[in-house]
Image (cartoon, rainbow, N blue to C red; front, side):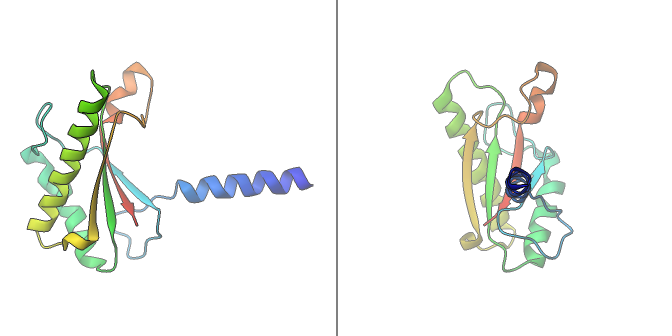
Length: 140
């Protein structure tokens, strides 16, 4: 019985760590995340591609509708030839998103940027590597 209870607690703890939210939610919990693959950047650059504005505006609208929410913008990359370059590029891209949100009415005190480079892959399989290039919005 004790092993079953410990297993349940382990599963519960892992579920809480992996909690997600939707941009249409009106109540979100600290630590929950929203992952998007719809924010694009120019190749090896921090500049946003024009096609990213729809998703960025959805994030902006979520923040405008949830004025108490503070977020961390996390950018993850695919494999990079140089580790330090990947951290720098992912951080610069996260800052670009933060700056976009600030320019569009979100207070800078509600936003934090973090770059992960390629250190936290979403998928290690060759055919799924493109999923590693993603943006995660984490509720702080």
